[in-house]
Length: 422
Ligand SMILES: Cc1cc2nc3c(=O)[nH]c(=O)nc-3n(C[C@H](O)[C@H](O)[C@H](O)COP(=O)(O)OP(=O)(O)OC[C@H]3O[C@@H](n4cnc5c(N)ncnc54)[C@H](O)[C@@H]3O)c2cc1C
Image 1: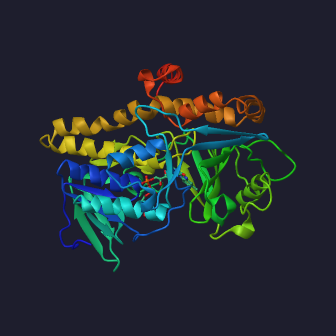
Image 2: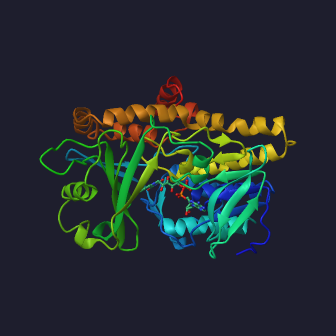
């Protein structure tokens, strides 16, 4: 680790999850001096499904990472979708702009690799440093952060710009008055690893058969997953995509009821667990904003960038990490003052332009998912037609070639253009 005596940089990135490490890597591509402050030490656990859709794979390819099976990545060629007794396999679409495979890697490993990648690009990554609050100048503008190190000594770290990539907690954002919007969904997801017969599989299983425990067989607004980790274990969990819609459910009971829909002996149950059930929130649809204020840019979960259609957050964390970084770099190229500020203030609009319309459609999807009659009808009729499922997955996964694409992509592009941005 670099010496902690040099505590100033062009940009400080708080948090070395996917958003923070990719932001740091991107800043290094522009030649900027970057400090990354991370409270944990790698490898550290992050509660997650560990799945990277082709969208996430694309960022990792752009970063030039070794994504070979020899490097421990597990590839999947598509999704196996379960719902109402119907099971359909769909391959990832073959598109110009996106790879046609997904990847799985434990987050403990993924995040350690991304941080190492940023460090190899020249970022100064410090672990074991907990950022406690922003350091403000006399005008109330962010001039760095206060943090505590392993010896709990408070330290000031200085930079004209700070990227908050702290994840859901968003401590820095909160202390500058950027609170979570209550009118946007916050999901919740839980997962555990099991020793399973489904550990090696070409397809990722997802299922819309979640029901509350008890006599009601009504569907719940979310989905379950079984992702083979390729090491004898599978990551099994589920996400409820909108906690505003009465989902104070007993997670363990929901998981048990859902897993009971699979044949016995697959190695999916509690008796097969190799880790405890753990959960965390899914902040969606740009639910904290504006994503820039007074020298602080938000990226990833700190800005609430999880896709409301499917709870996917890693791709968006990495993409917004890059966007925050390029905005910061462009701003630093301008003289301090109004010209620089104008660039920084454009960042929230960049996020809305990139995701706002898709997220708006996602909010509509969540409203439908909350209606068991609609889910019953759609799974019974839609899942029997792989082309319909494929088209829906492109929309949900935000994976199309847009107007350059085929008829499905062009239809999705029209639909997305018609939706007002969130
Ligand atoms: C159960 C579950 C399953 C999921 N499955 C998937 C999936 O399969 N695929 C997918 O794409 N997404 C999934 N997600 C969402 C995904 O995990 C998140 O969207 C993603 O981790 C966001 O990345 P991030 O970099 O913004 O934040 P994080 O990954 O949360 O990283 C934040 C980092 O900041 C550090 N930090 C926090 N506070 C401080 C501080 N004060 N000082 C210093 N450091 C700090 C943390 O230690 C952490 O390293 C899942 C989420 C859950 C809960």
